[in-house]
Image (cartoon, rainbow, N blue to C red):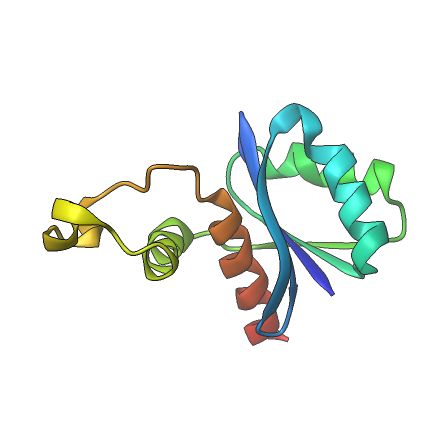
Length: 129
């Protein structure tokens, strides 16, 4: 199992991924990040953490290595992951009403979708393996 993480200043996207299966994903406030990560690692027997190389990734890397020594933590390129995640979000949450006629590329999801970014990052890791 791999835990994908989209790090951010205020919130983080987390996704537990095994191939095409995503048993858990969520967006958590930054202050709850480490506790939720530790819980996911234990509950899902995660062996690798895939961390996006964007905002504050170095700080996140140090925090993870300090709290979970021995766990494999790798960084992965985040380029265009937000756009891919937005497309994935709209596939799962079809716009309703008048929004159906607007291209989804012109719309902003009504809720955070950092967890979708975390899934994209984990999938990129699997493609590289």
